[in-house]
Amino acid sequence: MSLRVAGEHSRCSDWRTRRVIDKFSTLSMEEIEAMLNLDSLKTSRVYQEAKEEGVLENKLETIPKLIKLGLNTEEIAEFLELNIETVRKNTQQ
Image 1 (tube, rainbow, N blue to C red):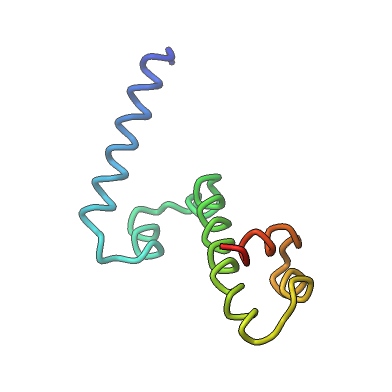
Image 2 (image 1 turned 135 degrees about the vertical axis):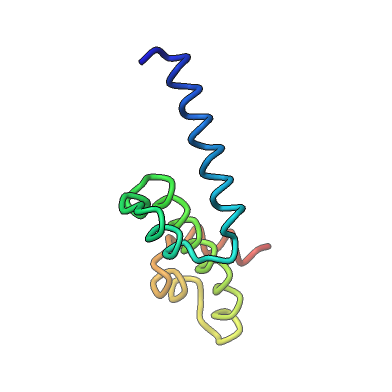
């Protein structure tokens, strides 16, 4: 497949994916996956990166709550499995 054809195929695939998500916005990701038989979705790099990003966001949102409970930077880093510098940066905001 030529690069041009591959690029057009990719754009078409992206468009189809967006259309499916738009049409089925009330369904969960699992329901869409089952309906379209997308077993590989959860193993895709995009899915894994998005999941990791969500986990990190949740951890960062938890930092102020742990500070209010009296935990110090080192305890928070250990509890959330983050490095100390990440915790420090997010306590200064």
